[in-house]
Structure formats: structure tokens, C-alpha cells
Image 1: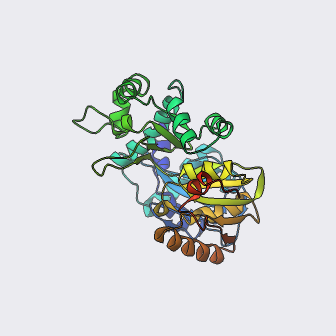
Image 2: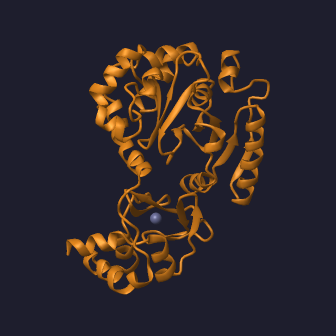
Length: 339
Ligand SMILES: [Zn+2]
């Protein structure tokens, strides 16, 4: 039976849904989206309602409307056809496998890196004090009240400011094995690049951005992102009727400091915007208005127009909301502006 469960679990879920249930499956990068959830049914046309994705070589699904966490193909059949797990396994194996390719369950390197990353974040949460982040954010004029709240919410963390201490802390708390497995420590290298980037902005438990405190030299990147970007950096506000999209967690904290009361979604960069998030936001907070507040540079302006068009197509309310006279929100905050 164990073997049969494993076989059923390894089914190619997008094709199972297409063939057995006639669902329209929309490709979204490496993932797929469908407008039907076997638990809370259908939302016509909202292809972002349920996401299909691969974890460690196995297809899973997750519903953003009823918050069903990552579940297996077997679970899908159980809910959809009101069957026991054993019956669902038989259905998948006997009825459908002939027509469905079974993918190899050997996870690729990138997937190992991404699936192991949540453990890194979990361990990083135990790295002592957050002095480096506090010092850095204070210089950016983020008040200690907002910083403490962000730390409490798991949106800010730090490694020791001194790279030697940071390396030591990483070796002790995260461990060399896990650092190699997740790509934090490159093969043949002794120093993880994040030892020089002590300010950490976790993005849920799926990924994180590591940032330098000073100015980068020799063209090194100021910040590096690891893990996968399932959820962006998200500040839950008190006003559920609006969400402000900004670039980077520092701008995210800046708008909170400036008095923004709605939610804040901070992209690590304009290229990481995922149009699926519009549908998800509107599903989670029906009627929410999206304020697009990216940087006032060419890339930011271009992306803003793109998001406005996507919002219109998705029938999600949106408006342009830039820090007009300033390059970004932190610059506006530093100049004493308020929202
Ligand atoms: Zn659902």
C-alpha cells in the first residue's frame, strides 16, 4: 500500500485536473493556476484561486480563498469525489495513470535549495540580538517602535555586524551542511556572502533578502536574495481596504513610519512582481484597492503602468501612488515627508 500511495502522490497533478475534472489549468512560470478548489468550489475566471506547484519533486496544491495549506494530489481526489485516501489512491493509480506522465521524484538541485530554505529562516530566528538591523534602520530614520514591531512580526532579523562574528554565528546556528545545501555557502568557498550582509528581511519562511550595512565595493551586490519568493515581504495593516506596493522592505518600513495604515507589499525588486498576487489580494480582501508606489525611476514607472493594466484586466481597483518628488519612500521619509 505504501508503494501505491507513493505512486499516486507522484502523479502529474495539472494533467490529472485537466483530464479527470476538465479544469482549465493556466501555466504561471513553473507553477499552474486553476479557478476551482475541491474544498470551496469555483470562482469563475479567477485562475489565481488555487496554485499547483512542485515541492521536492511532488505536485502539491494550495487554495488562497479558503486557505487550504499545501496538499497532495490524493487530497484533491478525496475532497473532489468525497472518497477515502485509500480509494483516492486507487482512482489515481488504476484509472488515470495510463494517460498521465509520472515525473521523476528525484528533486533537482534548485528545488533542494528552495525546500531546505525554510529551515534556514527558522534557525536564523534564533541568532541572538538584532543590533545590526536596529542600527541600520535607525540611520534610515525608521523609529524604534516600528523596528521592534517588525522584529516581533518576523519581518526583520540580523546577523552580527562584524563579518567574523556573523560567519561564526551562521556556522553555529545554521550549520555548514545546511548552508551548503541551500546554496548560502558555495562549493569550495569558506565564507558565505551573507556574512557581509547582516540585515535580514525574511519573506515569510520561504525566502529572505540579506543586505549590507555600508556601501558595496567592487561592484558587489548590496543585497542578495535566497530561497523562493512564494510570498513577498508583507506588513499587515489595520486598514484592510488598501495595500501599498513598494520596492524593498526599507521602503515598506518607511511608509509605515510615515503613517500608512493599510497593508504593505514590498517587492525585492520590480522584476519579482507576480501578477498572480492581484487576484490573490482581491480574493483575500474583496474589493481591496491597490496603491502602486514603486520607485520614481524608469524601471519603477514602466512597471507601474504594467501593474495598472494588469489590475484593470483582473478587475482589481488600483491607482498610481508614487513618492513623486523623491526617488523612493525612504528618501521621502528622510526628508521629513508624511503620507
Ligand atoms: Zn478553497
